[in-house]
Length: 197
Image (cartoon, rainbow, N blue to C red):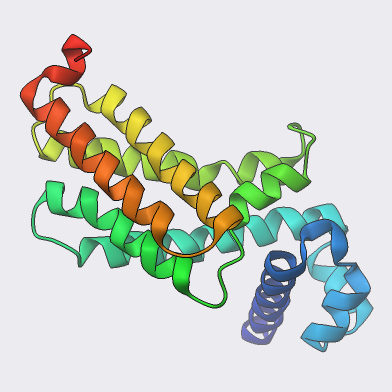
């Protein structure tokens, strides 16, 4: 019995995640999620007592799936930490040109949920923290002296590429961000970043 309940919950989360990403959180009502997932209204409310709870858990669900996909793909992009850092932009480029790309679901959620106190707003910040932590770990593995500062700067390039790809479409944002990340990495390796050169 618990397996069926778990499968139902997963189906609702998967459906809500797809609808929220494609149409926007505020543009999708609970009735649409119910119809698309093929569950009864009571079933949805048994698992998610409110739309806010559904939104929160959908953001968390998408975070888990996206991070698993992204970090798993990046890990296959190179044997060294430096190769994986630059490879992050190759993965972004592939994401940007996929027909399903509608921007970053987490940036979209933060924009839609303007109330910074909303639990889903806070949850949508999770992937940014995960990316920054991952970049800092790679920077340390690469022997970069200012890994914390480097990771902040790198994540700004990363996020900026996503926003520009959302606005302009196509792979160019990832390509330009990759070039800028290479310059940033080189400056950090030579110490020019610390000197402000």
